Length: 121
Length: 109
Image 1 (cartoon, each protein chain N blue to C red):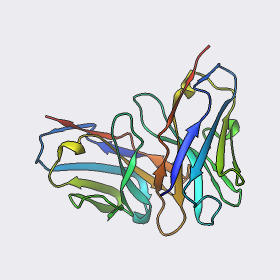
Image 2 (image 1 turned 180 degrees about the vertical axis):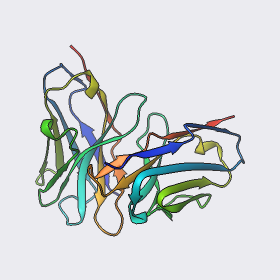
Image 3 (image 1 turned 120 degrees about the horizontal axis):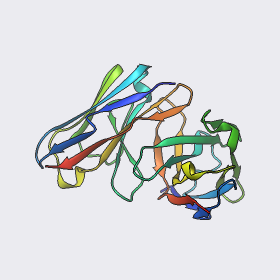
Image 4 (image 1 turned 45 degrees about the horizontal axis):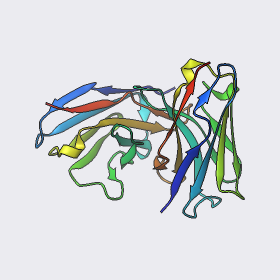
């Protein structure tokens, strides 16, 4: 069973960089056909896809965040990382790590539990 | 960008009733790339339907999806107490690669 776990600081100051890590267990990290990425949800609001990374290292970003986002992977640790710079209060959200598998369909089949990150001084 | 609109915003129903949720896209979406999720308070979303009409593993058959092009529907045939939640549709394929609808809350009447 694939499991994803987000970790990182829960409080970030405005203008600083938000950094989160997703640790994947269950054996599918590093294998072809899977994309690992980030989705966020501001309190009481809907879902926004931030970006994803393929096992080969190819990245895909939401154009609305692309200038501030970097997603990377560490296959030796089964981890995917998110960096979002120059944060403001609008970046306060629950951040989810999620897996999408290539193929005939495209949807997120495994999700982490989510991590609330608050941007505040 | 393909914008997904969901209606109604809130659906107030009683257990045992039928729920019909709508997802409308601003442009045509491939049926293969339309999914539905359920989210309960404090939990991550979980996929219910993918490919517009295929149930994900472990999803009860009271959940069904249909539609094509720009109009898609999620139907819950008989609401169980655990079905009261927020439901999101999601599309893949246009920049941004993934977008979600704003959600429909199914509330207990």
